[in-house]
Image 1 (cartoon, rainbow, N blue to C red):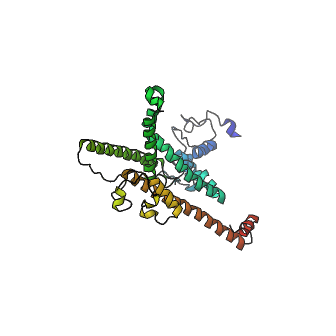
Image 2: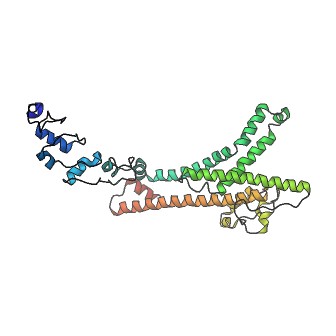
Image 3: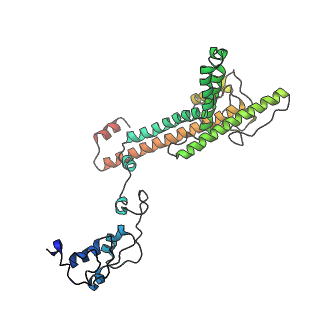
Length: 340
């Protein structure tokens, strides 16, 4: 019971000099010097205590771990292995973070096949919606012009429902969406946001470059000068690879006469007819961007199709494994009956 009140203060002065723990029992003092991360400075330490007390490590967080593992004084700090998902780069709670699994990984591992399919399809739809939002952001000036026209524009412009401003905004929106598709904005939905922002800014740059080229061509025509030539907006070569792509398509006429890029020749006739209708009546610059956008749309659709096929293959393998192990479920029997 000596720990409750300790020995008398009139004890040995060599043992109880200026020590803040002088009122404690020697055995308790020895225990505290071993286990406490805080070390007190004493005038003189007993020889027995100094011979059994290890020097504290430089990092008090790992003092207990180093005492239990080594049992001898440590001269260098221990550098723990920091997990990649740890929120403490200095190594705190490393033993907890070493077994940590993010919630997103747990949810992905427990998703059903239907949830995986919905994630793929919803991701593709979300990319399409993001193209529309990005195009509107790039056309903020044109949209503001339409709003100002309705608010404080001329009477004649408002009577015509701000036709010129609406037409400019509509063309900006359509061309920005084409540039975004042509630059691969629709390709995937799991890339960093910085990449999406770079694509969006580049699409806006290409659109205003196209407007500048059209303005220079118009000025040259008005002045009777030779029409200047410009490099391709998307690539150095045309998608179709022939001279027909440099000529404007007629506004009227059969759409079956419109050539398509080589990448779109293997599509179904119905899809090819839809693509030809989209190219009808476009200028050479607009046609080039639209062709590239259609090629990237087909590539994005093929990527989604591969992901869906991979999910179905994994589902079939898991179903076959359960059947071989005699653990076939009622849902497996129903799907096998209908050929799913």
